[in-house]
Image (cartoon, rainbow over all chains, first blue to last red; front, side, top):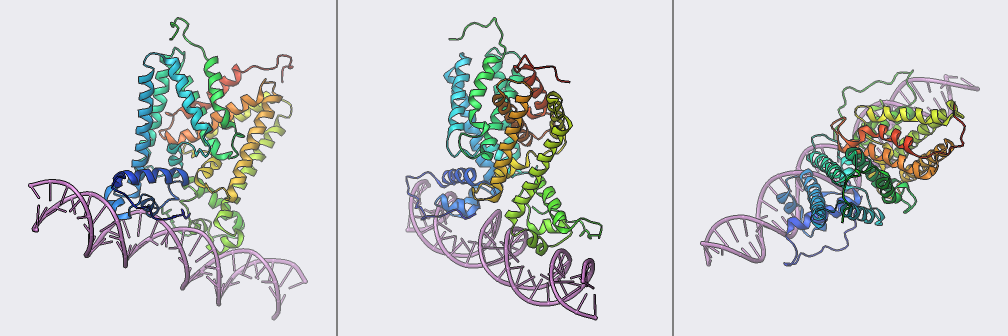
Length: 210
Length: 210
DNA sequence: GAGGGGAGTTACCGGTAAGTAACATACCGT
DNA sequence: ACGGTATGTTACTTACCGGTAACTCCCCTC
């Protein structure tokens, strides 16, 4: 695929340094068009730099891909920690805030699914440096859900977390298959999650939160 | 990626005709390594034929991809119809047989997820001939589930079908992210589906089936 | 102002991709 | 035997891709 290059953007001194520009461009292009569909030259051009600089910062395209995914994972981890800091003891509100975050993701037009999952589909070689990052991130995500639901007083938190995890993963992949917005089964996933949580059993002795 | 070509297989007169051999090779290679990772030459060689014959049967690689996916969709439709024919009125048994089929898919070692969903991730151009096939298939699949659950007496069959649909889609994509077999949340999806169906409300007036 | 490092520029390499042209061969019904 | 059709073979074009070399420029620091 040819990604249209309107006019070469000029880097100004106020701009972030090249490494950051490259990562920003890679994030946008990899996510939008797919990893295999975007060449390093396209990324360098979009980052207002050139291939040599790219290769001086990242030894190979594969390492750039790994850095791109690690960046996303770090940001997601930071978001989760911010959520924990905002509601340190109120687990119900933390869940609610998380659900609202999911709603934004799913309802966003032009959502292209989970970048991690997409990368796992595109990069099937087991030796690829990205695979470790993807796997670690998904397990971390699942463990966080288990802990959150456990703290929130749900019984069988592992079971519940897996169900929530799979529903959301399914929604994000499904949106890419049923592209007409709002029509696919994925668009109602947050409502489904709410009703699932409402129906799930909780420890009764728990004090009312907040 | 270089797909190892051990030794050029010779087509024998008893072999299926080239078009079918090409489709079989494409299915195996596309599914195993990904669509973008496999070139037409590799497919032709694996099919014990050559690129020219491939291009005489399929006008382009994109059309070959579309034919590959249409083939899969047709077979899945046929499998579903066979299920309907086997249990024409016993919807509970039909569900049970379907669940057992899912179990085989998910527990199969080296499962690479849903070929349709993977293709949707790899082929993001909206004009690609494969997109219509993918979208049609997924909607058909969802509608079949709605009808089946409705016939089986479940209340809110749309809601239930969407939940089942998303759980399974999530499981198949999740298996690709959590490659260590049996560890990820996807490996227990069929048990989750069973408990989901058991918990879901059903029309009480329905006669006991079989 | 000399030096050095990070960044930009240009040109290039080898490999592989999709797709095509021209030709040769095998099969098959008549 | 004939002619058409499907197939096989080789070679080619065009384009892109990941990656590298050699060189220049600019800015910061000592």
